[in-house]
Length: 288
Image 1: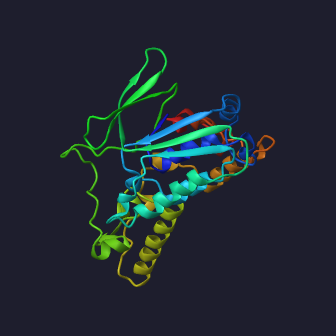
Image 2: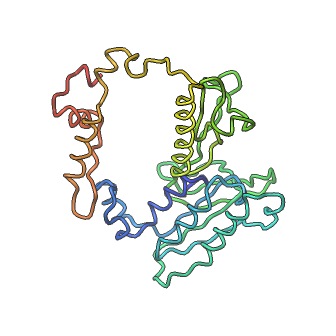
Image 3: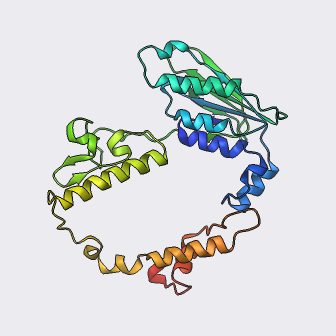
């Protein structure tokens, strides 16, 4: 059971339902791969509180699921009335319908069921998950009970209570804020600029656009770079910094030790990463 209907939930789903051969030339950890290889899932339910058209996933990520062969997809809770007055619902509903109608001709080894408009109430079971109780998100009294033996939550984040915010409120996307400029010498990018939406490629493009705006503003002398940057950090922070040379040492170690069928063997602990970056010359001070 996956609870959540954003892009992270779809990433988790894709990892769980891929065929063993789909991991060829990936950088998946061998221990994780061994577990996935042994405990092949036959049934996955993925539920979210939002209606399908308002779900936080991108339609492109739904279409990406269609590349996984041998999986049957069922979608429960689609309502074409969601298309009324919503420009963003149409591609999501179309992608879900296409996923459900898809046939790849392969034997079915797993079934995935999408359900929309359900909020989790409780997980049942003492020493082992046995089921989950949901209620309809539209405030009706409708209740749904589903059997499950594992639960993964991917429900994003909650805003802190009013008065406990530690960051600036999101800027309104009006005027120059649309370009990323939110004040004199102050810019924002990614989710802070556009809200919690978009995949990594979209956010990378967004960051590049804002970086180009900053560079252009500097060249036109609209901005003055008065901050010292790295040089302004305390010496004990600079001394612990991993240089680009250190990063390349980590990259070379990971790719050079890749097992057959993988592109790298990831170094999994902080201390091991530092030791590799520092060519084994790591001190207790650096560790701290």
